[in-house]
Image (cartoon, rainbow, N blue to C red):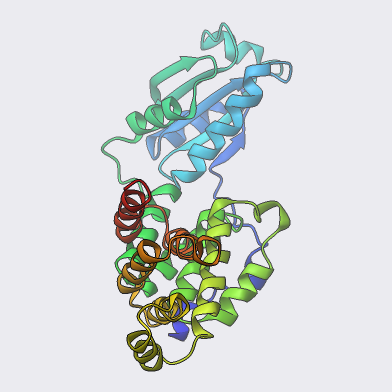
Length: 309
């Protein structure tokens, strides 16, 4: 499945996608063009801020984040009130931060003060409601994970790569793409991606899950042919190592549900064997699958039931 790699290779991971003028600094002189005229095509939010304003320093980055995730459905213009006092007075900006939303050339909505991210998203959603807004980055990550869960590795890889073209350091997409490569056996390529991830991202849960998936796949491949493992486990039903090897072999063959079943049976019969190895391996599989995978959800419930029975 070589097409999974596509045009996005590890060497591209440090490149930043070109900004499409989604966010710019504005002034009184450019306000008509950048805001009023532009809002006739796409909604524009205007962030009135000041260098000395503490809340502005937290609100500004959140606004920029949500605007970028909207991927062109809305734009943003930043106005320094110290440099544009007359404009601020004309729009009755009495405190900073103050945010105006313009649509169809006219003010549409506004708020003052620093809001949490959830309320900012609601503000943007009201502004773009009814428009042809493309999916946000968060939406694309969710769709990619769903495709991977459903076994459509190519669709998942395409979506993760699209995200990385816009946000090369998006940890959810990086981890997702690595897990996708692992799922189709491209372990060397997955390892290459993992090795090139910046150190600042390595503690991230998505990256940790990808590393676990790769380590688990390597361990599974080392146990040998599945038919031999099944025969050995059948001949030695009370041998915990034979059952553990069978579980890894099933996982390597893509029979993940059967692998989980085998490990749960092993946990039930040999809970403390090899320092709780069955439980540890189950946790690794759940992490590799992702927290929202149906097999993770059902497997965790069954494991919890056994632990407290």
